[in-house]
Image 1 (cartoon, rainbow, N blue to C red):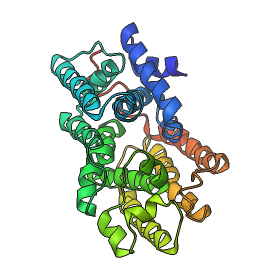
Image 2: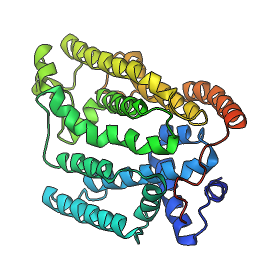
Image 3: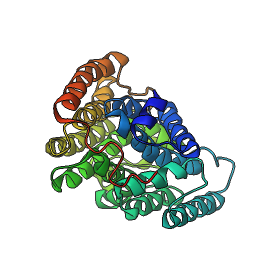
Length: 316
C-alpha cells in the first residue's frame, strides 16, 4: 500500500521514498487512530501526512523515550541540535536525516509555514522544564505548539476553500490534545507533569497532592467533567471547518474528530477511573466510524477528484 501511495504522490527518488516510508512506519506503530484516519485520504496525500506525524513523533521520542537515560539538559541539547539541523535543512531544501528528508519535501510541496515547526519544538522544550500550568491561558501556550500547529500544518494538504478553516483546525487540534490530557492524568504524573490548569484544580478544591494519591474522588471527578466539557465545546466549534476542506479530505478529518474526541466518552465509560484504567476507543467503535467514512471518501473522490495529488510544488 505504501508503494502505491508514493507512486500516486509522484515521489520517485529512492532515498526520498525510504524517508517517507520511515515516517509511515512511525505513524503506524505509534499513532494507530491517526493512521487509520489517514487511510481515508486520497492515496497521493497520505505520505505527506505521515511525514508530519514522523516529525512530531521523533521530536516527542527525544523528550520522553529515546533519551530516557539522559539528563534534562542533555535532552534539551539533543532536541536543540536536531531542530537546528532541521531548520538548516529547510533553508537548503533537502535533508540527510531519515525522517526529516520527507518532512522538508512536504514543507516545500505544500508551502507549510516554518513557524509552525518552530512553535512545536518550543512546546517540546517546555516539556523538559515545565511541570504544571497556572492558568488555561498558560496551558494554551503549550498546547498551541504541541497540538494546534499540527492541525495548521495539515490544512494546506487538505486544501481548504476558506481561510477560516485554519482557525477551526487549530481548535480541533487543541480539543484532541485536551482529550489526551484527561485520559492520561496518571501517565503524565509518572513523567512529573500535570496538564490540568492549576486554576481549575483550585476551583474544584483539588491539589496536586490529591492527584498523586491516584484515587478518583468526587472532586476529581468534577474536575475531569469540567475538562471534558471544554473538549466538547472546542470540538463543536471546530466542526464547521471540516466543511471548508476539499471534499476528498472531509471524511478523514470527520473520522478523526469522532475518534479522538471520543476519548472523553471512553473516560466516562470507565467512570473516570483514569488512574487505574486506560480509556480507549474500542475496535468496534473505530470500525463503526471508519467503514461509512471510507464509503464517503471513495464517493467524494469519484465526484470531486482528489485535489492536488503531488502538492503545490511537485519538485521531486
